[in-house]
Structures are given as structure tokens and as C-alpha cells.
Image (tube, rainbow, N blue to C red):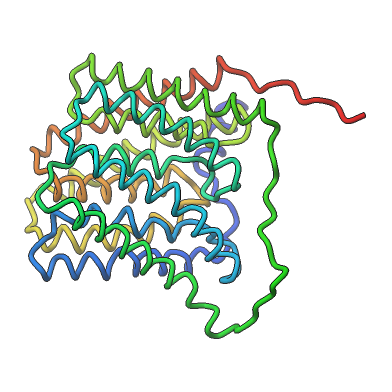
Length: 339
């Protein structure tokens, strides 16, 4: 009974609020305005590039504007690098097996980069997700156009994040981000976890013949972002439970086959509760984040609702379990004792 209560508390408890409404409004504007412009221009299938660019606004959520712009500039190298690499792989018509290998290697390098700069959200998840998603979209516009949409939206998102400085107008030349440095051994072990988890999840997804293997790879990365083993297991469970709830919401949304314009509006609306809950309860946040991502994917690459939902469930289970197992098997390196 005690174990059940602890699990229930861990999965349903809400962390204290930390200016989440402001962050959620910033992200909703960053996603919403470019998405509406693309819809008005008659190109809703390109919204996927705008959304990944807008995700730059997730970084530095608790920083003051001066440090937030620095934080986002550092994160841009990782997030936009993953998105542009994914776009390039799509235009090169890269095979699925090659894509799995490239994404696993990228995850390891991205882990080192994220640890070096102490990025928040922690880890390379969004860059990994951007690479896989953009690489899986069939190109419909020139390469430079897809990249330009992603870059322009990222700049727009960073400007929204810096807008608070207009009212504050404080600037300190000595202000720097306080980043905790890890031992080289810990950084390398962490990077190897990402490589192994994504490689195993991606290969397993391909062998099972699932249509979106990058979803399994992204799910495998989720538990590894946490700092301790218990937190990694909990985060993996959150991913599974939140995705299942989110898939149910997606099925309800698609039940009556809403028009494309309505799907775009729903994607924008879902961004707000997703970011509002992202740091408070990951499972509840995924209840809204999952349908947002699925609808965005549907706009870019139309498939049947059944295929979309089944692939998401199977690959989330596969990836999350893989990530948890890798976290269990590969321990933290022993920390050297200070003399």
C-alpha cells in the first residue's frame, strides 16, 4: 500500500508554480503567430518547421531577459542544428537505417553539448526530436525555404523571450549563467547512454516495421534527461502514462475529422497547457503535448488516424522501456573524492 501511494504521489503531484503562465503565453505566441501566417499563406504542412524553431523559447524559462537571450543563443546551436540536419537528411532521401545511425551519433554529441552549457530543459531531447521529425517529412518546398522558416521562427521566439527587458531595462556586463560542470567521465557515460538507448530503440522500431521509428528514439531519450536513477524511472513512466492519455485526446479530436484550419488552431491552443504543466507534472503536460505533436505530424505527413495512434503507443512503450533499461544497466561513474 505504501508503494502504491508513493507511485500515485510521484505521478500525480504538481510541483510549485514558477511563473509558468508567462512562459506558456510566450511559447503560445511563438508557435501561434507563425502557424497562423503559414495557414493564411496556404501552407499548413510547413508548420512543423515553425514549431521546432519556436521551441527555442523553451530554453531559459526561469532566467531574466539578459541571461535568457544568452541561454537561447547557446541552445540554438543544438536545437536548430538538429532541425537543419533533419531537413537536410530528408532532402538527401536518407534511408531509415542510416537515419537511425546518424540520430544515435547526434544524440551522443548533443548530450555532451547540452551538459557543457547546462541547457534547461535538460538534455538534447528537443534537438533529437527535431532531427527525426524533420528527416521524416517528405520535402515539398526548396531546402532553403524549410530552413528559413525554422530560423525565422526561432529568431521571433527569442525576441519574444527578450521582450521583458523593455520594461526592466537593466543590464549588467558581469552577468553570466551559472553552469555546474560535470566530470569528463560523467559526461562521456551520459553521452554513451543516449547513443545506446537511441540505437537500440531505433533498430527495434525498424525490425518491428513501425512507421515512425524516430518516435521510439525520442521516447528513449526522455528518461535519460533526469539526474538520478529514480527520477529517470519516474520520467519514463510519466512518458508512457502521459502519452496514453494524450493519444486518447488525439482520438477525440480526430473523431469528427475537423478541417485543416481547425487542426492548426487546436495545435496552437494545446501549446499553452503543454508548457504550463511541463515543469510541474510531465505526465499531465504530455496529455496536451502528445496531441499537439501528432496533429502537427498529421498536417506534414497525412496518414490514417489508426496508424498514427497505434504507432505512437507502440513506439512510446518501446522507447521508454529501452531508456529505463539503459539507465538501470549503465551506472553513474564513481565521483573522485576531493583531497
